Image (tube, rainbow, N blue to C red; front, side, top):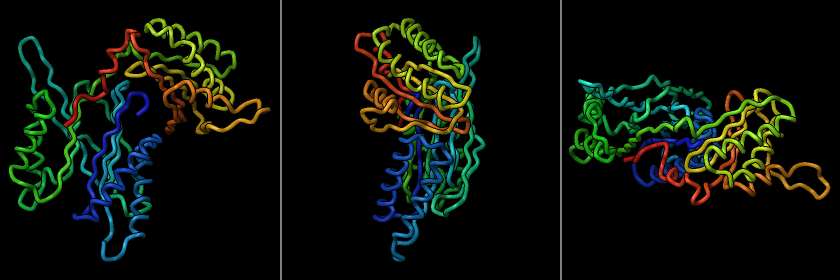
Length: 346
């Protein structure tokens, strides 16, 4: 996602067979589409609930009603915050990495964060809630369906305790962690479908994030351009100055003219260069076709032409206009393309 964030999703459709498989595919597509437009966590589950309600109306009585659980989380490597919402799904397990001292090495700490669990999607009209918590770099996030820890002959509390025991001494390689979990919890073929997602969090170096607060004054646009030029010079990306200054100028101008304070400009250097302009207004600009004699309406078209992708992200505090550019070959930052906010996933 934008700003080097990663979305993690796990869900479980009630039932088995062709009908449940088709519903799973439709819900997976819906989640991906809602994530692409950067909906807030609880808002995404609300829209997913609407999708399931519409699916129920299309189904015949013989097929039965569709219902599902879903856990939707986003990890931000800049702030190291994980924000998530649950629709009837069990919370993830968090494994905080062990600390190594001069004489002793402590074991990893395994815990279940306090997550408000909302109703499953498909009931219609019920609210969902988002929660946030900070993660230490190198923490593990373990998302799974209830089939991993519970079964017809297994108690869920015992299965959860076994999962925690395995994770206390989990190996560094995530595929091995998944193998150990499956061997301990599912020694034989399970009766229920099982999904397991294990991710290790990374943090983005603070030196690769540059922030500038802007006054609500048109004269601040030139200061924003100078700030961009200075930051890119420090990062060894001078050749990107022209397009980045253009990319920043347009949303900064729009935020000053049409937005509300506070206004902030942020540059993030990861596998791409991301420019973000945030303000306290919820009104977002839209890409449109400007007529020949129109005095405005071309700013987003210019941004779209010189960047790889751009978009708008809404929050409770306002909105963020963001745009991403690819790093030039031989820029001295090529090694960044091998970094991801999360380690290998099993």
